[in-house]
Amino acid sequence: NAGVTQTPKFQVLKTGQSMTLQCAQDMNHNSMYWYRQDPGMGLRLIYYSASEGTTDKGEVPNGYNVSRLNKREFSLRLESAAPSQTSVYFCASSVGTEYQETQYFGPGTRLLVL
Amino acid sequence: AQSVAQPEDQVNVAEGNPLTVKCTYSVSGNPYLFWYVQYPNRGLQFLLKYITGDNLVKGSYGFEAEFNKSQTSFHLKKPSALVSDSALYFCAVRDIYGQNFVFGPGTRLSVLP
Image (cartoon, rainbow over all chains, first blue to last red; front, side):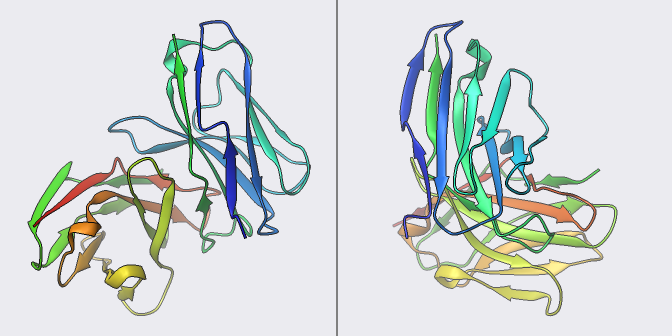
């Protein structure tokens, strides 16, 4: 099993450009998540999808949209990138959203917005 | 609201010595606590979790963590550190009412040969 995969690994954008970060999992998990990681701030939740067909906002959703394309895939879109969105983005998945569930993370996408 | 504190940005320890990475938490109900490790340019890897039961939880790579309800702490420990343990460590908490994790800011562990 590949686990959680993310593409691309690295991207440079100019302010105002758009892009989509892709995430896929092959563990038959129901729930998927997008986080951003900034120095000294840990990981902050952007959006999550508890199950196929549902999405909800996390702590820092502004400037982002998501699509749960099917059970395997969960994409994150930046419509008009801003320098404040320079970060490392991690996708994660879990069996469900119950409190005891472990989340499994992808390798990350490093995004630089100029 | 849930919150997690990792009071040390950096922990240095000599190889072979015991290590401790500290975590304290705040939740409104029973806590569910997790430790993750991040190696350079990699995603987070699950180490261990406390859900219920024994206060001492054993996890991957020889790590263990002690849950202390009275001190609201969940410190990560290892009896004998390896250079390969050098990484960024994150504590995370969830309560039974919360959908998602709250992560601490991370502690960078350096194990010196």
